[in-house]
Image 1: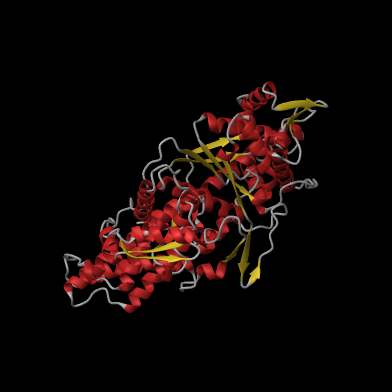
Image 2 (image 1 turned 90 degrees about the vertical axis):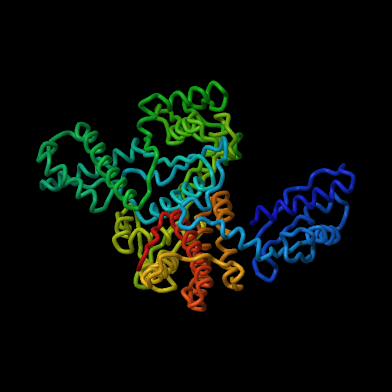
Length: 551
């Protein structure tokens, strides 16, 4: 409906331009939005304010003239002007019911937007180092990244989801050393734990697996000889566990790739050599530096190869992003933790150095998650091994509750994950409230069928009351919501929408009987709630949350 209104407003402006001689420039982009309060109408537009200079009139004067033209359009019930030049529009009830009946009943395609030719998007997310299990913070990043990918697909983009593993460098050596020490300690050797080692029971578990399979084979091996095996084996075990956790969390990746692969193929050295030849990298005091200060207003230039000859993580990331663009992606979305905020400028610089538009790279920074249990915030520290794993959260509250809760706030706001609230089966638990709307509607149809009805009947949309039309309007906003959420990379907009829709439905359910003695009224209300169920189900699917038939 929003698009219909936008077209009507655009046509009115074009007519006014032509009547004025057709010599004026086209107006700036006009917005048509749902106003914050119903009293302002179904839609509000700023058309007069953004076009006032072109017509050389005050916004309020132009708004009155434009409103007069729009009142002649059969789409609108009423058109009103509000200072300083807004135009508030009420669409006719018949227009809403005509469009509403076009929503497919129980069709997963509803809300899907036309394909966007040439728009190929890569969403890289989670990409946790294989140095420990996924924790609750990774869970939020996984939920956000996966929901963004789902929304973009629904919005018509060609989307791929990717996981990049940082599986080289000192961190992997420290990881292997940690397991090696725990392995030796299992056999009674008094070996001090490394200062930068990885704590956590998972290291003991992996050391036990090595001992169970290999016995004391590595007990007297020199560290240099044993470390490659322990680093590789520990990383593989952890990565397998990560994959299992993500699979359980309903997160699927189209591509798994690794830093090690880019080094092994020579891609890292190749990327540095290309940028050196292009003058984007320079040598100073035996090291190679990216001109990040010049390229992206970074606070300083960044080292990509040290004097020792070792490359930095940035060097590998440059090669990785060069590969992303070579694969034909036009937009790169990187979902990172908030601690990577200082990395944004240098990666923008790298993208520009590669000859690409820095705006085609869009980093999403996920703010921290604090866990609340029994009214208290749970203290966590990744390095000391004192953290809540994603697996523990899923064991406690389930996949649906975890995913929905992670998506209740914008990614750039900190999130308090209240375990007790998330498990509660009450209206103050948003995921329960939304899922219950779907289950409640499904139960209505079970009751209707159990009463011996084989057909729902033919709806008479003229019977709809004000509350029912409001439900229609909310459902018809779903495609616009998909577009806005995808454009803003903001899945939390969808969770808020679903909570609002569920709230409207539950209030309607308590106020109005769906199954009544009046056959025509029953048929109309069944058709209404069936479409509400379709929207709830499709919305939950975009969040990776199930839509239960009964609860």
